[in-house]
Image 1 (cartoon, one colour):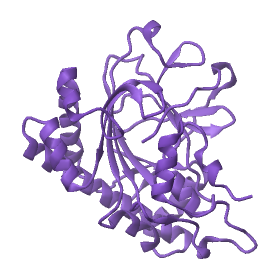
Image 2 (cartoon, helix red, strand yellow):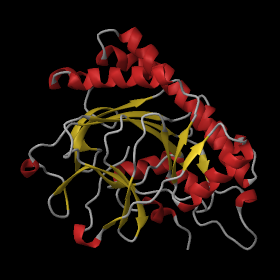
Image 3 (cartoon, helix red, strand yellow):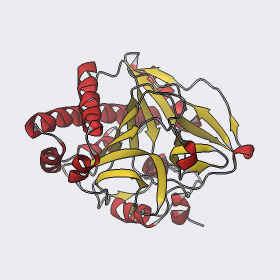
Length: 329
């Protein structure tokens, strides 16, 4: 659902080590809401611990994912090429972008999960149960976080939460696998000079993304002006990434963070990321509600449906700032 873009020359960039906010969801609710709002305003990114998703659900999903990526290429291709859903290898999305990874992109409704499980696993009923359990647990966490965000900015939690709980919610589940790149001379996706990109600079188009990883480094977030921050990944934590729709719904108060993944060149370990993209029903109109508009502050973006915006993302290389097309004068 995200597509890479050509990177700026490496000489113009800076890597800055800063402490990414890590929020303990077991703390007092008012404190948690305040910290979440601050992180969304400053970075558009934070990590959560004590999140309530059982470790065995995460570990079982991770094991099943590695089992899939261990398969031969013809076996993995049985799922179908990513157009947009299915299996992809190096080619990312529909606009010619590439990266040093392979991935599996799936819809999260039960009918799609059951169908794809027959193509993914030799024990489809077991796999369907595992992926359904993971998706529902993480969707629940996403709703909890959206509710805390809403409380923190003084609006009813239902304003955000119902977009993910609606029967027609258009959420996605993605598995990104980054095997070690041992021969960079054959890489087709380079970052300026000689550093290959795993997944290029982009923002996520949905409301928010929940990401967990097995801890192999590579993820970076942008502070703007060519400054990138490496994210230390904790397998016990979830990363929360603000998406484009949430930026629109808060009239720019929350930042849809640009991020990227560097290729896995420094480790013999394989890197796995599991991402839940929380999306609303396709015909939902995305706009900033009146109660979030400050006095004498007009909306920054014209209203649009999620279906329209999703169509827009497929038609462009998503490394560009897509929301610029929807800005009001």
